[in-house]
Image 1 (cartoon, helix red, strand yellow):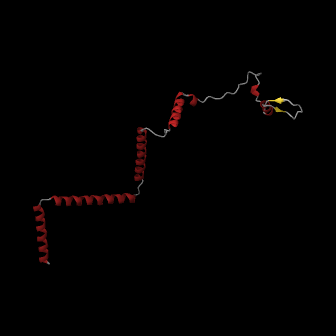
Image 2 (cartoon, one colour):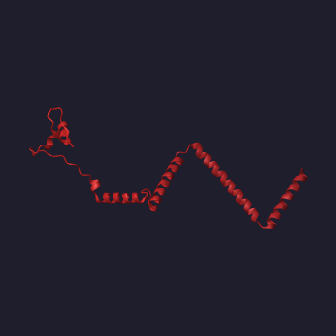
Image 3 (cartoon, rainbow, N blue to C red):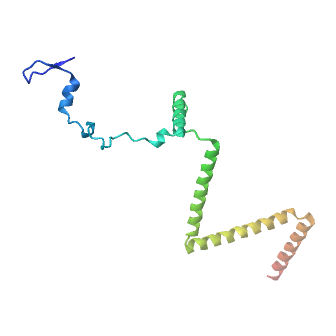
Length: 154
C-alpha cells in the first residue's frame, strides 16, 4: 500500500506514515540529543490504581452482567435514611409551630378549652349512665317535685 509522489516529478514509493510525518510538526522532546529535557509521561490516577477501586469496579461489572441493579441498598441503610428523613420533617414541623402568630396561638388555646369542656361533659354523662338505678329515680323525683312547685307558684 504505497502512494506515489506526483508533485516532485519522481515516482517514489512512500509509506503513508512518512507522508503524515512530513505534514505534522514534530515535537521538540523527540530529539534525544538533550538529556536535560523532561519527557512527558502519562499521569497515574491513584483512584484507578487503588485495590479497593479495582475490586468495586469488578463487582459492578459482574452485577451488570448478571442483571443485578446496584441501586439496591441494604435494609439497614434504607431504615437509617427513612429515620433521618422523618427527623428532618419533624424539625421542620416544630419550626413551623414556633413561628405561629399570636392569633393562631389564641385559637389553639380556645380549641383546647373547648376540648376540655367536651371531655368533662362526656365524663359526667358516663357517670350518670353508670350510676345505680335508685340514684336516677331520686334525681327524677327531685326534678318532678321542682317542676310541680314552679307550676303552682306561677
